[in-house]
Length: 449
Ligand code: GAL
Image (tube, rainbow, N blue to C red; front, side):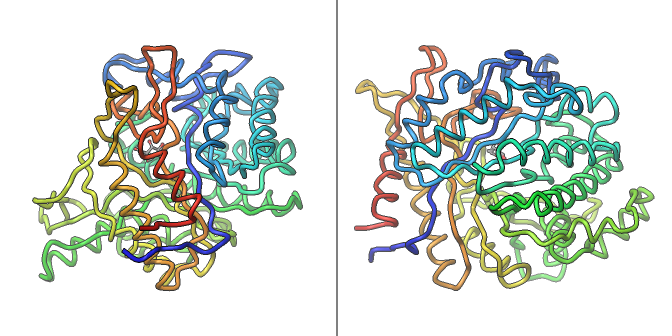
């Protein structure tokens, strides 16, 4: 392999989210989020795990920053827990919550690590859910107020902001599939939630511009590149539907101020549609500074007559699968990046999440030899490099995740970290082989022989 050296200003990082790592779920005045409620209802989460303690990062953030520094991260993506700073979602501010994020960000800066803050990584204040949650249009404006609070408290310290993480997952997995909080299975609700999330994104961008703070703002979408099983007309149609549902439903409004026409018509016909107010599409499509994408796998689909959206996902044989049963397919990352640049944006793109869960174990030598993750990451770095070579303005890459953590419906059973967390043994952190490999990649700014 020839050396693959990335552009000199390329940023290497790792990502986490508040509910997945912080713990301290009821400490220092934090309010409840929908995830606190959802995890405490028996049967929602594997083994009935909760994020009450998680990685105890709220108390161990200094140790975690030291580990980031040891790996050599340029940047760290974390999320702010809305109910930690605004326990009821609006109104009274919890100063202790604000202080925590100030301490975190200041220490990151001291360590020479650029903070990237996500405003919404799924932990809606429970008090707002009781008023209808994201389905209620008022939540859009409460989100904007929360964003403004964070800009004024942290704006001069945080140079990169992400409004939302994965509106697809929030709307569809939380409100249509029912696997995530708040746990509904209702198409109308899911569509309204998706729309309201996007409007709130646009308003948070407006407030960011008005605040005059320096820095950049964007949104993170989870996208998977879709491939048809065959070239048949039917399979191509299946691919088109799947892409519209997963990807274009979010990309088109943000970049083209419209919903995919065919799918919108189908939804209107089938469910009577959802409320779009005058001016909403302009708000959603406000200019952003970068697009964040989370990429884990691809989708391969075939035509399915009985399905509303005419497709069904298939699992290619002879592929490697992660512990999530997701196919390892690095070429999809390259293809996706090239497509985004060609069809949607010539702005910077960040891979805000990419990584894999495997059944890691602490070995007798006290180390974690996670060769499958080492291979996964290196192959995806190569794919990212190829996209840059093809002209994509890819500006950075965040591995998911810094730490093993609370993996939503799967609880602690899935480990995504490049740092092992021993939950049974005082939360002990151990750099896995993948972290050591990443350290070398960062030091070399790429892959060397
Ligand atoms: C993403 C999510 C992360 C993480 C990851 C792995 O959808 O943003 O929080 O859990 O998936 O499943």
